[in-house]
Each structure stands twice: as structure tokens, then as C-alpha cells.
Picture (cartoon, rainbow, N blue to C red):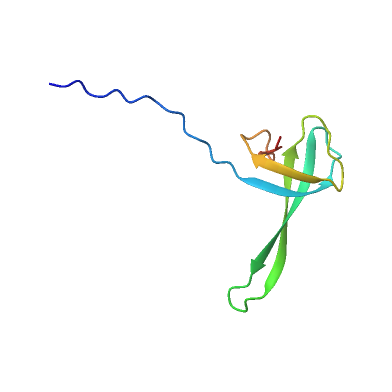
Length: 88
């Protein structure tokens, strides 16, 4: 009988969500609040409207300030509200 092929274990590639937005608060240490705007379309009337959401993002070096544009990605939970970190 032939030996069964040995299949190497490969690491799964993590698919992380990526967003970009504007910093609206930098008062906390190593944390910034980023507002992300989206455009949605009403299902019945087909009118476009803006929807925004705020995310708490980990900023290790405290380098971003109010008004800066930031790209950030999903990561492991860092606190009760923080599940995002600044992209490099």
C-alpha cells in the first residue's frame, strides 16, 4: 500500500475589517475616537442618506489629534469598547 500523503498545516489568513475616518476626540490616553461616515440607500424611496458611527481605536503612540484622517483595522479586544487599532 502507498503511504498516505502528509499535508502540512498552514496558518489561516485572517480577514480583518478596515475602515478610515476622522478623529473626533483624543482626550483618553492611547485611545482616539474616530467617526466613520457611510452612505446608505433607503429601500423603498431609494434616497441616499448619511449614517455615521464612532469607533474607539487604540493609538499606542498618541500621535493622532482631532481632525486627522486615520486608517484602522480590526484586532483582538483590548478593552470593553476597543476592538480596533491604527493601521501602520
